[in-house]
Length: 191
Length: 191
DNA sequence: ACGCGAGCGTAACGGTTGTTTCGCAACGCT
DNA sequence: AGCGTTGCGAAACAACCGTTACGCTCGCGT
Figure 1: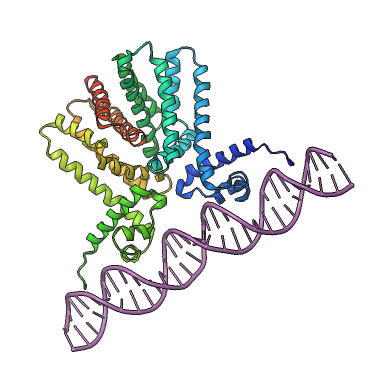
Figure 2: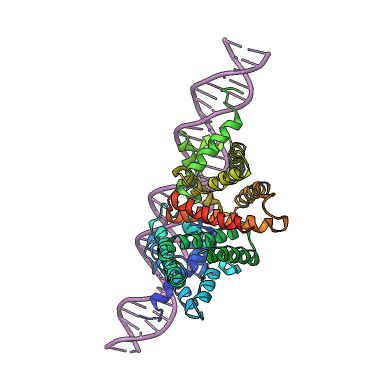
């Protein structure tokens, strides 16, 4: 292997660049030429590691889900107690910084195509499954088991709603957090 | 004007066909050839009325917003009292039938491109402004004025969250309505 | 020290896009 | 009756897409 480039690392760079292009131009504007240019090169830079575009699109969701998951893992392990962990997780779910808004725009592209691109639906389901698992662990002492899934549904709906409202209508982080805290507060004192 | 075709009606047909194509194929697959074929003709059928594709994309959101708005108007005028109207409005906002899920998929396409297609952002903002106005009217007796916007934020977040969760994870209408009713119940008894 | 293969730019291919051009059929007006 | 305008299909255009082919330049293994 001359000119030492670790294939795994390079692929991650490519996925990173693809996500930037995706968030900016959507799936319709996600072209190999743009991804190559975003990396400061040409299309060959991409095609050398992914022989076809579909192969890249197949890889993208998986790498993304792993990254999100590890971000959450890190965040949860830094928490003092379940209540703190819950607060951190909920705050992570809402796009309260410019960078997270950009990432969220990328995520929405998956929702927009989930009904016709199976791998997009898969990453959304997998990530949702993971988040619900976190909630389940954090709430096991607070919520009776037979009401757990309903409570998680409500938490998911609230967080997801704030996500989309922010992307659509540019809610400020204060507005997001005020809405989140009040709804979650109502929710948790009622169970 | 030979071969009597009312330009306004024909344009509405074209927008209708464009929305079908949009919900099915997303913005990336919204091509003039497909729209023409969906109308049983060729591209010229579209280009004759819209000299450019951008012109069609500019017109699409406006016509759509008017349609949504009139659907809500009709729904509200059929209500007996404010509480009933509020219930109907909230139920209208969640995609609880197959047809509404398809329409919702079309709407998500707008969110996905709202940061780079101004007319898409405009229709979302305009519709949101209208819905918030409805809420404001229906809640004026229940909610103190200085808390009104916060309460509306919460209602919007809940409804929007259920919308997106349904599109992403195929929530059943029972699951939607259970989540909606419980969250809105908590919300309204607290104010 | 030298050859070979990895990394990547350039260029060309067929296909699809938005747009323009042209042509003709169908109707209202005089 | 015939003329002009409107509605729309057919076809051609450059621009762009994914993909492939080719060529250069490195740096490691021997």
